[in-house]
Image (cartoon, rainbow, N blue to C red; front, side, top):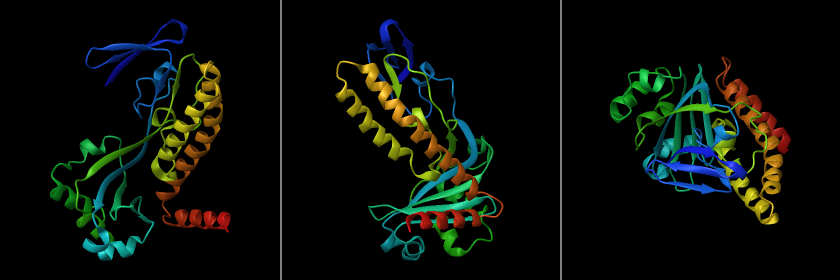
Length: 258
């Protein structure tokens, strides 16, 4: 595990590990997530809490074990949104259904809510209390889950996050473009940028700086657009008139496809 990175001369960086080991590299790619240890070399930006927490859980082998929920979710995604909260689900390729219980909360909610997420049954009941008058089919997405409950506070880097070129180092994935999951693009961009960075390095085997500059020039505007989309989608999902904003958004997507 990386604990610190120290800039040295000539585009070199010393990486310090929790084990006490160190190594020096002429090319450092910070793909170390939301709380990156590499990012401060390039940027002062810090993740910002977006006012929403998700609790992640799963319905396993849904068609067999949870046929009513499987029919409700269908073969893709299902959003149930109202009163600044929601149940957001999608079908996975292995037959399970991922369920996100979404609530507008304070940044400290995970630790201050009084919910012990390690005690799954009790936590499940406490989460159901947030949806007292919701339809039983929707409440079953919480009541009948098969796995532990994993709380996730939603953070993002500022839209348009970028940095000036500094020799020997760049960022990739959440370290570079952390965004909410409400555009469904964070992991997609990370995989795409990993491939594009590799291609840039192969195209300029004797000029790392040109490769990194090319990679960043392409990735910055694309990341900005997707981050803005993610923020907008999150906003409409938890507006006071939800689910109308999401219905309007889906209609817009359908018109664009049509």
